[in-house]
Length: 84
Image (cartoon, rainbow, N blue to C red; front, side, top):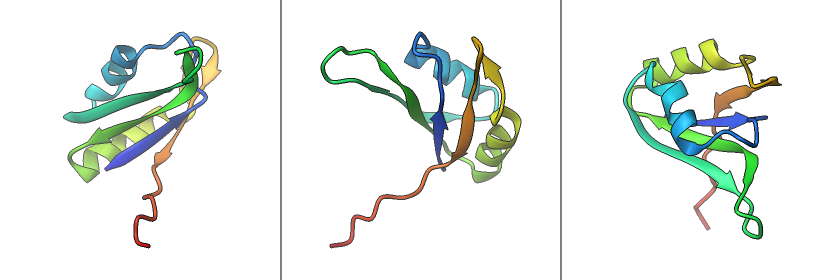
């Protein structure tokens, strides 16, 4: 299940994001969204956890958690509409 994480501290790196979620299961992918011009974090990212139950547990446990003074928002990522 793909998870969207918003309001991340701009100082958090991809490794830190992965570390936060790996306590809840096997992290298949971790992507921090970066500004194309500056290369700095835009404050949100995606994590994919293989087992749905583990992903739901991570969402419930981490939504609203404070990281470096930022209260993060964690939810299931909406699938992109690829059908055209």
